[in-house]
Length: 486
Image 1 (cartoon, rainbow, N blue to C red):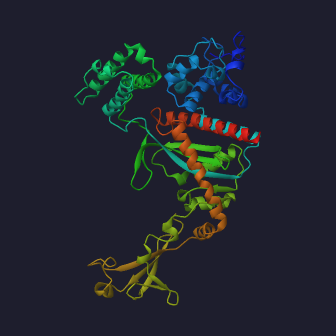
Image 2: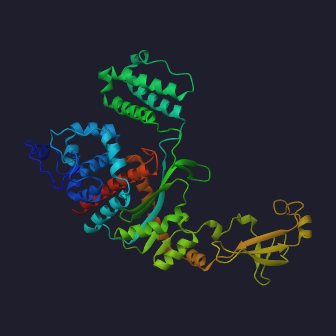
Image 3: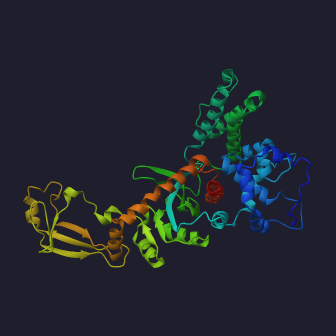
C-alpha cells in the first residue's frame, strides 16, 4: 500500500547534500523544475491505500526509471550506483544512509503499475506544460519524423546472442588479467542453446570467484548484462522471437527488425508528441495523430515540417482543413513521374497529344483510373503499333510482340498542384531548412539514451522506454534553454 501522507525526512545527514550536490547539478535542477506529485496522482489507483505493507513511493520508483534513461544504465547498475552516488540519492529523495531497492522491484513496477497509464502522453504533456509555463516554446511550428529502434531479441539467434554477451565479459576480463583465459571453461562446440547457456553460467561463476576482478566497474557492468540475459532466458523469454517487433525499411536496400517511434517536435527542440508502433508502419499515416496529440499538450500549430513521407494526399487535405502549412515535398513520382528525363516524350499542345522520340504522334488518348480512390487518374496515350515494330528507336521502348504501345501521364489533383507551387517557393525552402533539428534529436535519443536498441521485449516495454527517454531529453533541453535565458 501507499500512504496518503507525504513522509518527511528527519535524517541528521540531510545537510550533506548541500555540500556534495552542487547547485548546478542537473539532477538537482530537475528536482527543482518538476513537481513529481503528478506521478503519485496518476498511479495511486494502482496501489491499496489502507491494506498491506508500505510500498516504495511510486515517485521514487519512477525516478529510478528516469535515472536509467538519463544515464543509459541497466536495472542492476542504476541500483548499484544509487548506493554511493549522492546526486542519485538526492534526486530519489532518500536520506544519505537509506538503503536502495532490489533491482527486481523495477521489473515489477513496470509490469504491475504502469499498465494502462498512458505514460508516454502523460510525460510528454508534462514537459510541454513546463516549457509553455517558462515561455520556452514560442514557435507555432512542429517538425515530424520517425526513428527506428531495433528489437532486443531476434537480431541474432539465441546462441549467437548469448555468445556475444559472454564474449564481451571475457574481453573486459582479459584487459585486466590475461591469465584468466586458463580458468574459463572450454567454449561449447555444439549448436544447442542450452549448452551455450550452461557455458555462460560457468563464465559467471568463474568471474564471481575472483572478486578483485568482478568488482571492477568495466567488468561488473558487462557481467550484470550477461546475468540479466541468462536469467531472462531461464524465465522462458525467447531470444529468437519478439512477438510485437516487425521488419521495417530505412531505405530501399536496408531493413531493420523492431519498432518505430513517430515524433513531433517544436522548433525549440522540445518533443510535443510521440507514438510507438511496430517497425513496418508508414510514417505519413501518423501525421494527424501527432498534430492532435501536440494540440492536446497545449501547442498552437500553424506549420508542419516533414520529409516526403508526409505529403500524401490525405495529409494535404487535412492541412487545408486545419489551416496549417504542410512543408513537405511531394513524391517525385507526382511532380516528375517515374521516368528519367531522356525517356520522356514531347507534348504537342496544338494536337493535345504526345510525340515519341522518333517523331510519331499518338493516335488517341484515354483517361484511366477512378476518381476519389486515393490515387490520381492518368491520361494514357496510344501509339500505332505497326510503326513501333519497325522504329529505329524501339530498343527499350517497344517490347517485341506487344499488342499495344502506351505512354501514361498522371493527372495532378488540385491539392497536388497547389502543394507543388508551394514547394517551389522561397518560403517553403526557408522553413524546410529546419528539418535537420529532428534528425539531431533522433541521434541524441539513440546514442545518449540507449534508444538504438529496445531494452525489453514487446510494444509495451518499448512505450515505457520511449516515455522515459523522451521525458529525459525534454527536461535536459528545458534546463539548457532556461540557462541560456539567465
